Length: 247
Image (cartoon, rainbow, N blue to C red; front, side, top):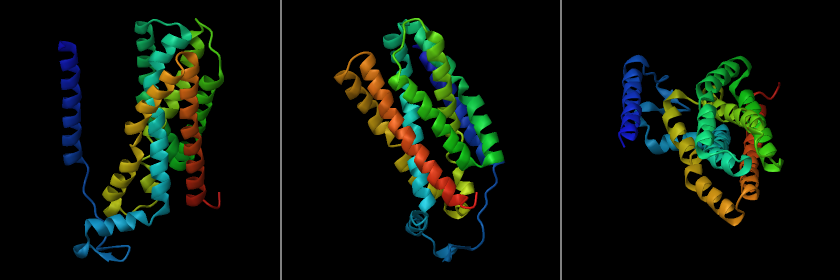
């Protein structure tokens, strides 16, 4: 209980510190008195919502966030998968997943750097492609007990894609040239749709694993995840072509 309390306090302190940092360091900006022909003093939340809903790229971005978040939620399955498919004990499986989680800062920063160099939309597409490969491998491969290096290698590939996407998908707003004045509304709309996997992924995973216990259930679940990775790949490809039609 004491360890859990320490973790909760640690997260709370870091979150509060981030809020203070944002408040004092990031400057407010609001471009011009008119946004898409709307006068600022007459703006309302509904006006902003209508502006945002008329931007096709926003709907693709929402789909991208949703598909990426499905992959992130699927990361929770790795520990049980390691135990039931690769014969690991619970402690070693938890350590393996913790190692995968440490990829987060490296993957996010690297993806952001490469996104600045080659465009965010293209790196989003590449990340979905890597994620699709990783999930299809787990969905189609028959693991051998003790071949932990196979599990580790492919999990690190999937983790790199998952956490790379988390460092990319909100940066798409700049590439889409969403007006700063309505960015908050755009973030809200994308988040409402994009984070719906919180509602259904764990439920779907439970149903799939209950229906087909053991390795087969995990393979079916990875195929479920792969479908969303494929949708995300198509959405990011479409967005890339929309934003860069001549390239």
